[in-house]
Length: 74
Image (cartoon, rainbow, N blue to C red):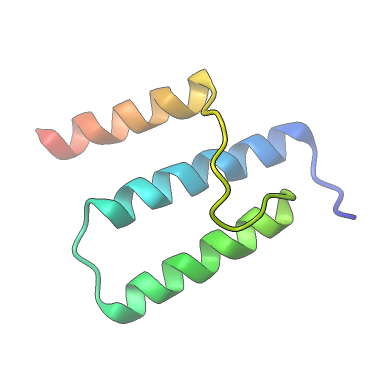
């Protein structure tokens, strides 16, 4: 088992969500995309999620996504 606190797991979850957003809305090389996907899969394993498993986004994650969207849209 890992020793991550709920806050650690939430932070990793938020980063996974943001990484997927960036991946979906960016131009990556094949190598960049592969690295991102491996990193997401490893982070999901750390928090006990199955790779690609969908989950409810909490308010903090949604707010972070909106902040990223607003920065890239301006």
